[in-house]
Picture 1 (cartoon, rainbow, N blue to C red):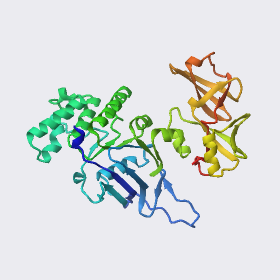
Picture 2: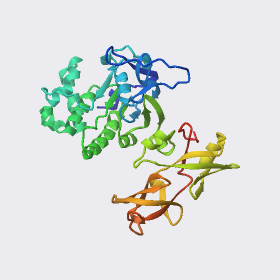
Picture 3: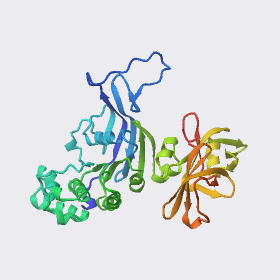
Picture 4: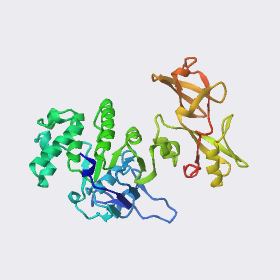
Length: 401
């Protein structure tokens, strides 16, 4: 598929909301609140109103032409529902969906000029690979020679030319997913939607297909909206990531931004593997300087962090302190910890320790190993002020932002 075949496509979601109404006899409406201060009732972490269960709430996002956006979050956070609203497979309860300046809330899926790749491939089992890929073009009455050219060009890009005469049951999972992607790109859509396309593949195939999607993105040059619960996919594929939880956007940013500057405790704990270590610590302001204190260890925050805290006039307070395992160093002195498990990971050892009443992971590069670690050993660790994150005890937000 040549880049010139693809039209420009900007996508705007303005305060999109999705409510699933109650079905008579299947769900009960929540009882009315006793008073204005009573909190909203929840079920499966989703808001329940008199209208029904709110799956997506106040979702606003501007997607640039040819941008690769990844929606990521745990199961049930609303990411697939959002994608299906863009596709037209779910009605939009409120808000506006705009593609290239045109509101398409009520436009039929077939007229939105989008293509979607599903998690379960959704191939026609009785058709050959060639016919599966050609099907949408035949429906649009594209000339046969043009269909053949586009199908074979897409097959060559995806390295599935040798499978064109086979039926889906004769293909592996990775090959079927390539066919599903091929069927989508032959249409040269304005927007390519992908709903967890790699989740049914084993780890090795996922890595291979992830690399293929990166190459594909360079070759077809269209706008992508990609849904996954796998943060590795999100970090490696996306120009920007949209982290979701319980129907709400938690943070939008580049992979580096959400990794280095998490907006709140949820994002900090969701992005990064192994997950960020959290402690009950203290933030102390001394003039224009800020220090974090954990047990008997104290460190001054970096000038960049201090400037952001000063701008917000943050005062001394108890905080949730976050430090990533890869930013935690074993030292002669520092915070004391008891070794629970030492996992040899090849290039590093993951030390699982208990410190300050918390489970903590310390990553020690094997090149730095001067001794082995055993269960019950006492070690000490430190961290630098430029990698310490401070979160409010009141609302879990990063105090820098």
